[in-house]
Length: 57
Image (tube, rainbow, N blue to C red; front, side, top):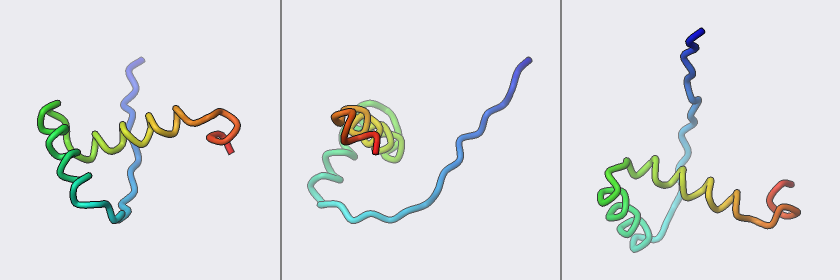
């Protein structure tokens, strides 16, 4: 049976260097994804790439 799934989100504010944000905006536009979506993917990739002993605490 088809089940509709909804991702839960929370709003947070982070300070980031201007140059980094500009680079992310350019990449997001080039890949045709939202900046928010790109940052989520980058964070997930970084967390998944951590050493298993350090990243799974």
